[in-house]
Image 1 (cartoon, rainbow, N blue to C red):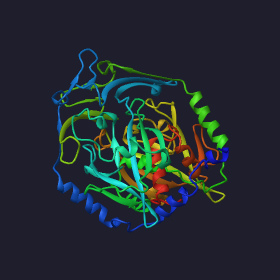
Image 2 (cartoon, one colour):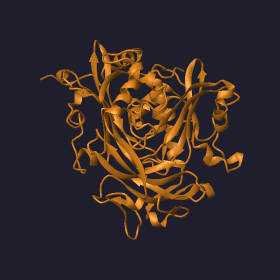
Image 3 (cartoon, helix red, strand yellow):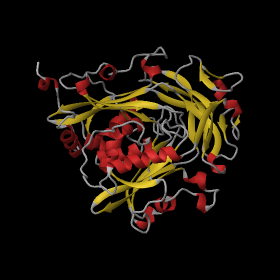
Image 4 (tube, helix red, strand yellow):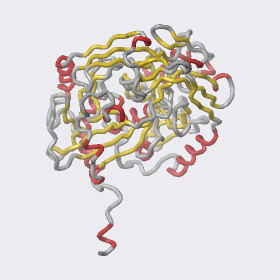
Length: 463
């Protein structure tokens, strides 16, 4: 057999064009109109019984505080635990702290099935309830499951469509990468983000699933709290082409800059017993800071008529305020560039990931002097009055672990006065194509940056 018969192109030659066609189809797809999606979500909410009630942490069923360490754990030893974390990042008083953290070492699957209808790729999206969602049901990936869930530790039903991601032929995988979750609330958590084609396969569809084009999802990303975080992170990893052959910095320069940022930070992070976390208190209802800043750990009981288990209880992390995640962008010689921040978070696997220009909860910074506030925060907060907001929508974070964790995601137009080409330390300008190239690999873009990239990839925002 000749060598030539063994070789294939290194990439799918037509995939980028197929994704672009899907992004261009808005308004109506194979199965439903975009304007009907929110009504469908409301109908699915009415079709099942969904309730969420707060309960004291010591009354959570099958959860308990471990004697000695005080860690909050599930009786199975699986799912996740709330432990303590001690972090030292550089010097100074702001570089040392302790906090509760979610420890979930197993890797979950976030997977979306894709299939062509009338020559246009559609994505199989789920109306999924999560107890921490402010509106309970949101548009979710085809499969969104931790290993404990799909291995049925809860003794419930199996995860629908799971086999398309665990038993998939390699030639049907369109995208596949390990990506981080929130480094401020998780300790070294990763999920497998997958886009898989269901070519030539009949997919039975239940009432809780619908096929939508990429363009329809983009339209829905302009609405508050419709597309959930797990769907957004997968859409932020799409293998889209680089439409910007030129950039302020070459790809090698960008990778070298990221490597240098990871190397320069003196970082010491370790898990400690939750009972030993300094500056936090535990009462009947929560683990919290006495000053009410940052977040608290609280408990809920849940009823969900269409989940693998119909009822359970669990702890959730509840932020103390609405966050902001914003990219400043500028056209440099006609090419859109966004200002990324090489952000250190205690829970990252690789110390630093590229984050939006601004990523914080503003109320947490109100007690501090102006000079200690995050760079560019005031530029973002004043964008509406200046008329420089290109995109703004509120999206909630992962509702299976966070309660009402809402973030205002934004693209804000900048100029030489608000954001110079010579960026301050820890910041640099990159193109959307460069972000997409990095998103194909794990642990380069954080989950907030991937949400904003998904908004561009789906057409929700045009820079």
